Image (cartoon, rainbow over all chains, first blue to last red; front, side, top):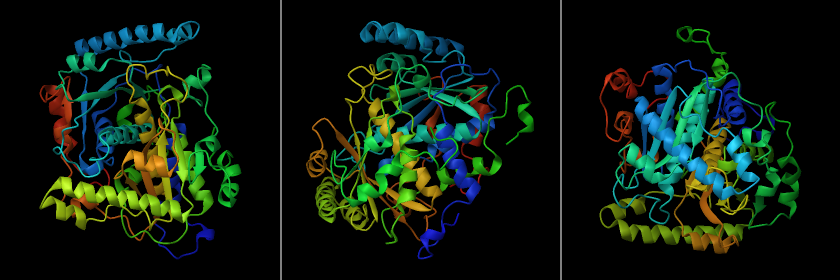
Length: 249
Length: 249
């Protein structure tokens, strides 16, 4: 909570040590879970806690563009599974061999297995045509809804609940199944449930599909590609050091 | 950490109580800060902690599309201020009176005042043309970068640091100032620094510009607009109840 190097020129509004640690703990050990959900139901009060966390995300112009469609009917779930699987097979063709076979061997969704399934949508027309901060960037509704999903994901991790964000579907298919207005966009099918473990590494890394990049490749100073000067020198080495939290990868 | 109603059918992977509380504490008390940043510098080690938290966000197909451009040069900062202010004046004209005057009275950015200024960008070409989970939805790079910003925001709140995500600018202006490749999109200018307080309510609500919606308006079951059946009955009332955390609004 206190850091002797900071002096006391500003009030210390940091969270108490254990709470602050919790934020990083959730961030570092959150995983995108696609398999091995346990069948145990998620109690309603915990589900509501997660939805409230999502609803307290920031939104540009306070437009709160998100909706959460909880899937209860097994027929609706089967329909969603069908269109996700269709898109998975279409994607496999686009990837081409040998990437195609590798992709088909991955379990990329748990639509039927996860006890909780939530469709998240964006209504770009919410709060009228002119939204503060949105006039110059129409993607701000996407930013806001993604932040809501991130909040939900971290709250789920805190509760010991795993989550996978499935984006393998055609927008039009999901719009039809969930009866969405034409202008409302589905941005994800969230699979949630208790798990036996949060794997130490992302599944795509374990499966040798893709790898975590060094953070230092992603940080510049004052302009694209610029990695020079005394400020850069003072931070560059530490960007890739893993010594602050025990969960760092 | 344990909930007697859950039984012990699954391992309890929830975070320790104080850590779990910390996640919700950060989520509920995070604010979009636009004014009253204190001049105290943010130590490099804390800045790095925030960037690492961002870099550990989920990304579709593990594409890690984000870059963080730290603004050190005061001339670059002045240039960004200029184009944000230009867009602010343009937006005021679009809003029309009396919304226009109200908008101009709001302090919507702290480009010059915040000790730390970070431009966040998305490179849609990262990881090649075909990214897992992205074939059917080209916005997945936006989802991922937004999640990174959300992680950074919550880590900042945990450290007692305020943040504002500014989206009031023309993409082409910021691309020019930061020398971004044509295909790289700036999605925000993040203003960060210590603050005297995290206001209890969002600024746009205090200023009577927009209001928080009841969560129950945003939740459906099995399809758009559907709020019926026994499952809905069992959760609908509790969606708007504020009794779990002391920070709920």
